[in-house]
Length: 62
Image 1: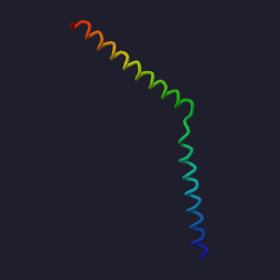
Image 2: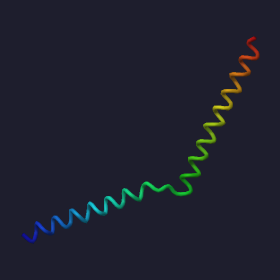
Image 3: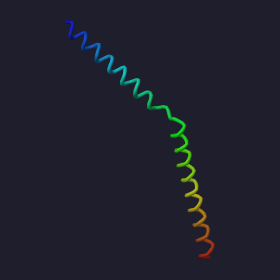
Image 4: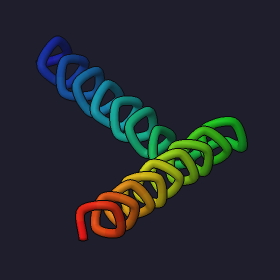
């Protein structure tokens, strides 16, 4: 009887700690946000360069 209660208590504690650990992963720090902003800016710059290349190609092909 004592061991089964201890086992249940330990499982409940491990589940609570696991949930708290996973919940902490959702928050982004400032470095991660800055990295995502840089990635977005680079994607936008690449799209702009591709659009400019397409416009130049259209201009010189006519």
